[in-house]
Image (cartoon, rainbow, N blue to C red; front, side):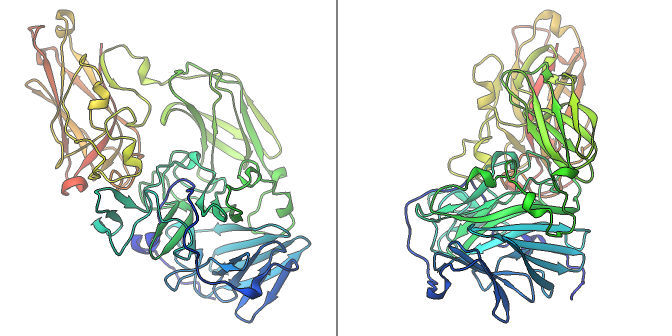
Length: 560
């Protein structure tokens, strides 16, 4: 058994991926690989010498390599779906030599894979067209955590923001962002989805659907708003992913321990049954299987909150829970803010109330096994929107969502033909200010954006605090401001992810507010004249174009 330390490069980790919501489409050209011998028969398993062959007793037969733990075959209704480019489906980029064993316990077959300190599991349930998977990662022997299901090309529709044609499209960035002849961009990064936005991703022909149904991500990193690779398709094949830690736009340290189950499942064209979703899944059948690190329902607790006080009706609220070992979240009910978060591992968590994606309140909460922690109404204590302002551009919600091109940027490159020009000075009071202001500012692209505003005589006679909120930054890009003839000091760079972000579908980093104390002498004394605020991006690092220092804007306001 190999126990070598295997560090994945970003290229190895990302090879063959992309993302998007569950796609639909008409039937496409049928794939190859019809296997007459693979018709569903009796539930159980056999050994063909190289693989364990598991028959679900429904319409699915799959194989797991006895030497590597790779998933080497997925035959549904007689058709082979698995594999492309000479590669199979596996943890990371393949574990290599591993110890693989199998056992049947009543209506369940379990395959166990051990490679060094990492353990991985596959399970089949009698009569179901699903493969249940778990991954237990104990340490940093691997630098990321993912499972990729590799599916043959030509079976499912090659469409969506995470699809491209290598034979026809042009690479425009880092080998993984493509531009089509019509000027639209595609990438495996362009899901447009946060973790909390989806239960499953996959493809359908209309008559066959193949889906990756995500786990609860309790051992993942990045929280409810994290964006990562979910799926991809091109002329070489299709990838479906469960990614728990990914070294791009990552804001948290890696968590360790057992994650799952996540489910690779077939349907007759429709979306998966909601009973397979992580929040609904009955896992009582797992309790006796002996999976390393498994904690059943009896070993978990929950938190229930009466509600939130001080909510803004224009924004959704999420309550997150996190510590070094686990993460969870729950949507707060509209109006009351009531929330419930079940199925939590015991421990002490930081509870964070998010307005949109902006943390506006934190406290600690303790969870006990078999217990229910009840919380009285929580009064939101740290919403920057409650401050009185002279003007406000956008809103404090932890996202650039109100600004120009923001929504497009979760599933396209900034150079995409659909993007409106990134330049755009605005005048406060001119109407549609936020919609005219760019969501992102780069040193090489649209540096020096201007905001025009007027002050009353009383306002011009006083000093004011200017706030600029950002959601992430590329290579330490941060705003230095000029107000008329007054120039601010260069602000200290906050901690942000060190990888690409603004060009790979993610504005999510660490929300940060820069404050600038603007003296009364900076303002125009003539109230009929406009004051001019200029934002310049500064950084000690260099880059070019859309990979030059940059930042994503959450909100800009001038306090009264």
